[in-house]
Length: 222
Image 1 (cartoon, rainbow, N blue to C red):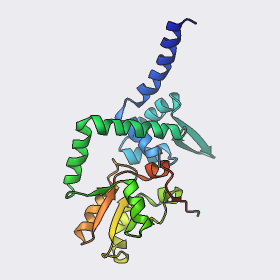
Image 2 (cartoon, helix red, strand yellow):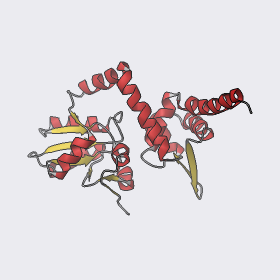
Image 3 (cartoon, one colour):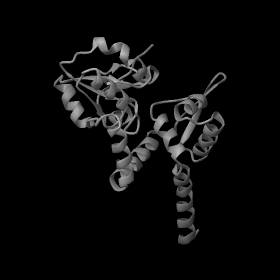
Image 4 (cartoon, rainbow, N blue to C red):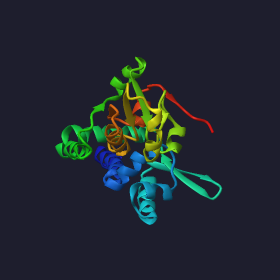
């Protein structure tokens, strides 16, 4: 193989990976799978796609070796092929947020619609937790919380948050987090908390970003 053939083949192989990533639905699927394994029906439900459409996108990601499947009897679940897939998605996300002003504008405009939601980054939140300055709420679905969550976080799925308000103190800042910067559960939670008179903000990143940094996490066994 000469040099030209080598370069054509290696860049061609890499382009198949980037092609698999060049679709908004597939990026959303990768963002979701960073939380752990999901069935195609759960993926469809979380992304607003039909099962058939979600299945097609999953097959494209599988062919690019970005996702894998596990079988448990009649049940099939999809997960990221490895930690590096999330690394790549996180890097792409940060690249877009830093250099594409449209991304930042969409996020800013959405949060304005919820009443100017303040945010804190993971590093600052870690310091606040060390000083016991905040109450931390994980507002993702309970199953995702059980798979893994930030140390000392309280499970408060956004759809059940109203029921838990009576157990929360108004004397401390409350920080809500969810799947990542584009997950809206935290925005909805903060909007509700502020409406009820709590001091609240969201974490900019999500649980996978926190874990990626090696910050303290916990798992709940059932």
